[in-house]
Image 1: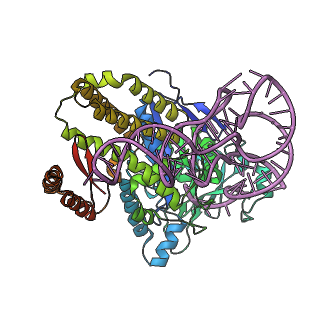
Image 2 (image 1 turned 90 degrees about the vertical axis):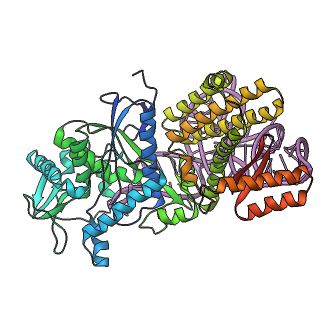
Image 3 (image 1 turned 180 degrees about the horizontal axis):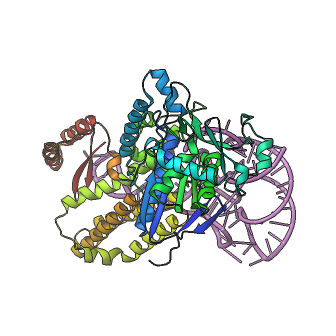
Length: 489
RNA sequence: GGCGACGUAGCCAAGUGGUAAGGCGGAGGUCUGCAAAACCUCUAUGCAGCGGUUCAAAUCCGCUCGUCGCCUCCA
């Protein structure tokens, strides 16, 4: 593989670094997935979409990505919900795991190569805990196992904190049994009525942080390239993950730590605990998935992004612009009875094509600058429309016309490819309540033909009635020099 | 209290030393029987404020103001 110019911002060094995976062209990537106790909210969605986008782009750049995303299917929140509903914790987890995958599918977020579940990785976690105890990085008290932060000298490096400062501002509940207030649980002894597993320290369940370490090691290896998640996971979750992993293996755990910014509401972080959240299904009732993804990618992934109607509406219109351009050229192609070779196409717009691709790659190479990448997409749309206008102006000049058409075709293909890389499948923008089915096309064609006859005979009131009544059922007619095309409103 | 991010047009947003991308919205125009779509023109002499470095600053430095975040479960 040629030298990569891809740069990624690394949380632990606080700088953009060239992406050089440990074992190119392989790239090992892990993302902190959902805790399955409820519908995920739109802020969670940002994390999933960002991880998916990074993965897609790495693949486009030629890396062989192995991507693992965990499912946390045992924790306090799941247990609490199960109690409230009077069902088993496993039932809650199963239900919302299914919903997680279902909603991701709607969003066009691809499945990871592997989605390990916490409850299926218990043996690996116990092995890891045993190692930590053996190496004196962990200690047992009354069936609980704690990690000793003092035993890991660089504790705090990832989040940029030091132990003294952490303790001054500590809001953590002091547990007198712990050697240090910041020591965290690797294994929690079972409470009555809670799900538990047998262990060398008695029945219990794993602490939150240990599952990710165990899964990374079990399914990717002791050292991986990219570990991603929301910025709120930097401390304590990822800090703890790093500490316990490196303490156990003595090897660097993660080469690039990637964290996405918050999704805000009224400039405040959206979170379950603040109660200011919208779940994914609430949002999808009002906006299609493509709109949502245009919105999420409209700002750089590390910057906060404000969720409100105006911004979503703006994203909706931006998405519509791209979709409409694609639909228009699609329909116009069916009206042009000329065949265009790829060769002619390539000749026509070679320079533009190369330029657009380079700008797109440059944008994405710069720490996945999707906002800038989207602007390239809009530039391509503009270029397509310009060529279309050129077709109209060419009138009887067939060569000119074919040449322009060829250009449109090639840029259309480029646009589709970039949309795919960004996970913006045009099908995600499919409107609800549209006319569908085999009969629709020929029926509307009949009406278009009749209207065309009326226009030729200057019977404009009839022509307009056809158009207006079609509009009433959601069909828009557009008259182009090549003929009339129709679209769902 | 400690640490950190951010402040660019009516709104969103890119831009980290060379003279302000892109989108949304708005205004006018072209095409059209009329529309729609598209195209063209306009919509920040200025990047929170003040000071400094420099031939050159939205970009670097300092101070001030404002917003948000982490230090507790959180994507």
